[in-house]
Length: 465
Image (tube, rainbow, N blue to C red; front, side):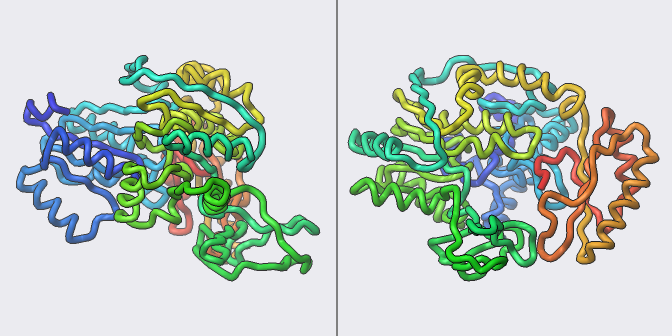
C-alpha cells in the first residue's frame, strides 16, 4: 500500500465483517495517520456524508471496511486488497446477490488496479483460478499443540484446561458453532421440533431473553413447556449455544469473565469496540463466540483455543462442507499462538480427516480439487432459481413451468428441483431449481428465459437453504 500511495494511487482494503474494523483501524492509522477512513453499514448517514466529503476533497488514501467499501467514489485506485477472501460474508444474501471478492477482481481489471486476495485458507475457487504467492513462515514463529477429543458440549476436561490457562494469567478462545442459545426445542415422545408458524424451521431458544425466535422472519414467542403436536411435557434441547456455554464456564471457574462474541450480543459498533477493548485490557479472560471469532482477530495472550462441535459444520448439506470445516478449524486455531506457544483442543469424531491437513492447508486444497472436478465450481458454474409464493400450488406450478422452459437449453443441466430445504419463510412457500453448466453464457441465457418478479436468481450460490 505504501508503494502505491507513493505512486499517487489510492487503495481499497476489504474485510469480511465489521467486527474486524476497530483493530484494523488502529493498525492502518498507525502507518497512514488520518488518510484512512473506515466504511461499513453501521455508520450513520451523517458519518457517511462526512467521509464522502473527505473522499471528494482528496483527503483519503485508503478506504477500509466491509464489502460496501468497494463502491465508495475513490479516484485513482491502484490497489484492492480482499482480506480473508475465503469468507462467505463477501457474498450478498440480498439483491443484488454479488460477491465482493469477484467484484473486486472485475473492478480491478477495469481500473487496471492490482488486486490481492489474502487468506491463510484460500477458497478452492481462488486457489484454482489465480496465481499463488505463499508465505511459508509466520512473522513470529510459535508452536501449536493439537489434541482431539470426542463429544458435542463442554466437558470437565475442557473446563479444567480453561481453568489452568486462566490461573496462568493467559487468555483463551472458545468456538461454539451455534450462536446465542441457537438450538431447538424438541419432543422426546414424538420427536418433533417446535417450528415457527410462518416458516418451516425450528424456533431458536434464547434463554437469556426468555423467548423463542425465528432467525428467518424474526417472529418471537414465549418459551413453550409442552409439545404443540402431542402435548408431552417437558420439551428438551440439544447442542450447546454461546449463552449456555458462557454460563457453564463462569459458574465453574471462580473469578473468570467470559466475553460473549456473537451477533446476539454484539449488536452495535460501540458494543463491539467495548467488548474488544475489555479483552485487550484483560478485563475479560475468554473470548467465546461463533464464526465471528475466525475473522482475523489478533491478541498475543491467547494460548488456548477450544473448538466445540466442528462436526456440525462438516455435516452440512453443502458441497463445500469439508472446505468450510477445515478452513474454520485452521482459522480458529490461528487466533491462538500469535506471540507464544499455544494449545488447540478440537472436539470431533473425525480426527483422522482433520489431522491429515493441519500442517498444510494447500495439500487439502489439492486433494479437494479432485472431488470437485467435473461436478462443482471452479470447474462448472452453478445457479439457484428460488420461487417464493404465498400459495403453495401456484409456487409448485411456476417451478414446473420454469423447469420446462429450462429443458430447452441443452447445455444447461437441471441438477434438481422441488421444495427448498427450508420450505416456508415469512408465510411464503419456497421452491428451488439448481442448474449446472460448464460455460457461463448458456447458463445466463437460460436464466433470462425464466426471469420473473416471483423468481430470485442466485449465481454462484453459497447458501442452499
